[in-house]
Amino acid sequence: MQIYISGSLAFDRIMTFPDKFSNHILPDKIHILNVSFLVNGLVERFGGTAGNIAYNLSLLGVKSTILSQVGKDFAPYDKRLQEYGLAVDGIRTIEQEFTAGCYITTDMSDNQINGFNPGAMKYPCQYDMSRIDSSDAIGLIAPGNINDMLEHPRYYREQGIPYIFDPGQQIPALSGDQLKEAVCGAEILIVNDYELEMIKKSTGMTKAELLENTAYLITTLGENGSIVSCGNKDTAVGVVPASEVLDPTGAGDAYRAGLLKGLSLGKTVAEAAKLGATCATYAVEFKGTQEHSFSLKEFTERYESVFGPLE
Image 1 (cartoon, rainbow, N blue to C red):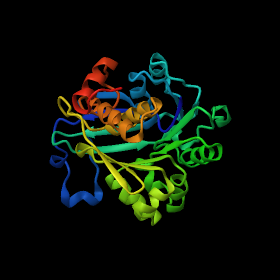
Image 2 (tube, one colour):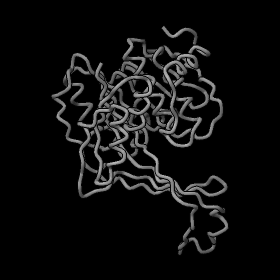
Image 3 (cartoon, one colour):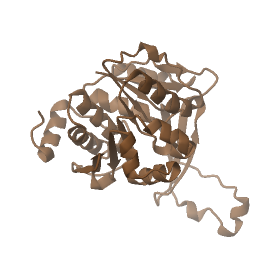
Image 4 (cartoon, rainbow, N blue to C red):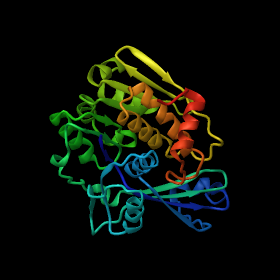
């Protein structure tokens, strides 16, 4: 099975402020805020929804094609992707822009001030979708360029290619009609419980109506696992215990990679979700979205410790 992942590629630039923001912000002067925080250096990590999912899939022994856009500073990320054997021919380079970047400053109370520069993500990836073999492919549309999030589902529907719609943090950027169009015809809609409520409110559709227009709805619930819904049946999928929880960021993308791995093996959606739960647990054990790793043997042992034999 050929897997195509539409979504963002980004650099996460993380800084730590060795104090509390509250000690340097005067509440009575908030209307003329002008502050500067001296940080303890900067750590740059690879991220973005498409990059994170593809990275986790590579750990699971599955190669995928990323459909995304990057800027003139992408070289180190490009090198990393190719080291993991990931296809980069679906990535468009916008020479006048920087790759999307998130700038995160965290204080000693774990408060954050973030800035996000979409950079190249403002442009569609313009991949020639006709290159996709419709008889042996699946697409996943993760948060990224809005045009791609609308055009790729249309193409998949027209060609009869199953796809997973994962709008995530881009839900507010899509109108109710746009969300409804992308959801209708999807094989799987995957969201967390808060995002599900946002989609219902924006589209005016109930959960039952969503399930009349997509084969499966997966609702992730963080530490409470996930629910796979089909028709009027809900199947609960438990969590796999982590050795320690350091950072939940990236767990959702890891879950999606495990889900895709399961589907590529011909498993049912509920069975594939168990692989998703297993993959997610590795992500939370490290700070950053692509800092963890595991062997297939380690993955299988962790899966089987909770769900039984992986056949």
